Length: 353
Ligand SMILES: NC(=O)c1ccc[n+]([C@@H]2O[C@H](COP(=O)([O-])OP(=O)(O)OC[C@H]3O[C@@H](n4cnc5c(N)ncnc54)[C@H](OP(=O)(O)O)[C@@H]3O)[C@@H](O)[C@H]2O)c1
Image (cartoon, rainbow, N blue to C red; front, side):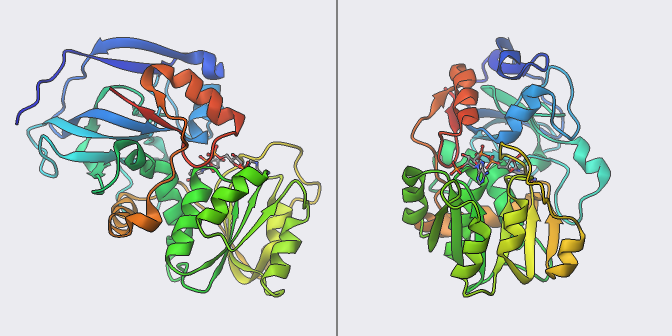
């Protein structure tokens, strides 16, 4: 059934670089549809640490002033441009963070295209998106659950399965850090393939979620500052095969302590607060400990599609974890505050009516 297209849509913009104070809500005409674009009624969106950094003006990749923030969204196709072949009105879709990053290797120019930073994003009720930057929404997920896949989900998938010739497999040990969006997906993916997980976190309450998701060992990094040494002990002294480094300078040294020979350290963020470890590792450590350090930037559309199929086929194990506190689009500032507080577990989501 053809859906009526409203004249106007609600949208947030990042006006300035004052963090949450820069977020401005307004009602604007629905964007005009380009020939290769798809008009989407967004029903769900999800926040990432990246959104906080974009609003502060410290995002290290391309940004443009007054951007509509948010990379993660899920919704229903309202209309398609005349050259669109991949979608039809009524289809449910998920946004890809980078509509140009379809597959293959990353290139410098690709970093110029990021929803919510240099391309208008998902914190709005209706958006026009490049058809190449959308994927079918996995069946069985709610819109908020599906929205978490665009950044946190695909980045975790890329971290564990994206290094050619070296995917995570059954029996490997994986070390994850904290209970944010990326790390929780890593725990789920690792357990689903039969790997063993050592997860760190800051509190007993958050440890319960990690245990529920099947983490084999949980270490409180506040109570055990040398958690990397402890993690290596837990592997029988061999060390872990994968470290997913999201916390940055505060955790790097312990991450190196935890890793085993021929391990992979995926370096992907710096969410940890506090002073950097004085003995921050350097490149020589990769030689002295014989591990590979790999930086990543989200994931490709093909990885997003692969992950969507895996989730659809394994909903019991891989249903995205949405924090119980879900916000309305109009409450975006409160959602940013909540994410910033670090009280959340998994993904902080927005319902869009
Ligand atoms: N490179 C990429 O492609 C890419 C993609 C996605 C995200 N990222 C980056 O990855 C990081 C995580 O993103 P996110 O969206 O998952 O963040 P998030 O949801 O905001 O996660 C924050 C969580 O990190 C944990 N944390 C904070 N300090 C920690 C520490 N010292 N040690 C261990 N855990 C700590 C806390 O969990 P506990 O309280 O349980 O410890 C906190 O709740 C960010 O830096 C983000 O920019 C990068």
